[in-house]
Length: 407
Ligand SMILES: Nc1nc2c(ncn2[C@@H]2O[C@H](COP(=O)(O)OP(=O)(O)OP(=O)(O)O)[C@@H](O)[C@H]2O)c(=O)[nH]1
Ligand SMILES: [Mg+2]
Image 1: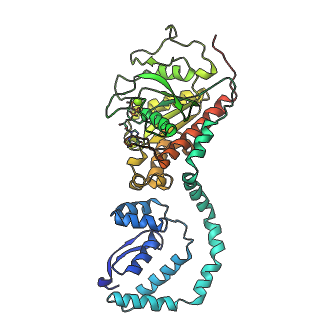
Image 2 (image 1 turned 90 degrees about the horizontal axis):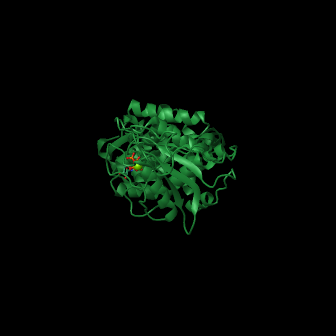
Image 3 (image 1 turned 120 degrees about the vertical axis):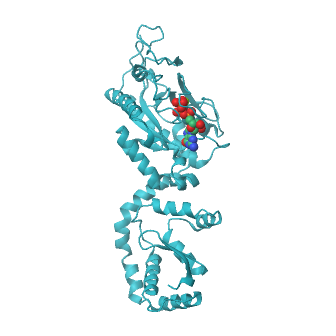
């Protein structure tokens, strides 16, 4: 192609070339071809806001063999090949326009017919992939209110308990306390800050073992209590490992102030000797930040694994909340809906899975409310989906437990 016709060109996936042309129609064609996953309005907005680099990062975050079920894309490829194979390339925009129109008219009829007739086969081949992709995106269109309603009316599987007990643990500053505030915000439809969160610190801001119920409008609470734990530090001031065991088994009282020098002993009057089934932990949730998972020290990982193993021995299910998804992928920062299609987020989830030995199905990427002044649907939905799954894990665990009332 003559230099005057093109201002730039980029390869953006299978058969997709992104041209930056001054000729409007071809420019539109090229953009459609390379970023078929974006709606027209989104594309216009991204162009308007000068977010092309973000757009490209999103294109690259999609799988390389994204489904090419759009028949017209194949015809763009045919045109592309024809223009490139010209012995004399177009010298100017008018030339290019004329050549494109001529080439379009010369595309043989059988090419169109083949494309149409091959559609059922291509749909079949790509169907499985599409089903996964659609399923992962679809929940963003599930209604926020439906999810809230299902949690409000959550039926506990064990008549001996009133609340599922979820225990959060993880490194300092991972967003544990902010996660509890975020869940409260979701159900109160305003930003709440009941639990003290850190601005920035290397030592844990949370010093007390405390359970929080989630209030929901208009009245009432969810059948879930979330316990905040002191963050794991790379210092000698760390929480004593036996206090984790105490918390899992239900020996730690609500309001217990952590003492890194010694754990709560069974001789202490505050020690709950025979915890009821409702006082035990029903699901252990590791909270890690997507932004710092790669930098987590081996000591912290080992401590987390130790607690997970302890929980696993007791039969308590484990899960991971991966916070700060907004800080690792530009596309997700731009629009949270891309969380489950972002390759960066998937890589971070895999890293979590490998480091903590937790299956991918138990890892939930979220973004906490941390600098917003009001709630929004996309942030709500990720938080709600995570909470719903965790509640199910805990509910499955308590199903077979007896009353074990405290003596
Ligand atoms: N961008 C972003 N910031 C977050 C997110 N979650 C938490 N934060 C910020 O991270 C910082 C630490 O959050 P906390 O909730 O205090 O973390 P923590 O795990 O409770 O920490 P400790 O109690 O000190 O162990 C706060 O400044 C939050 O505003 C998130 O999803 N995205
Ligand atoms: Mg905290």
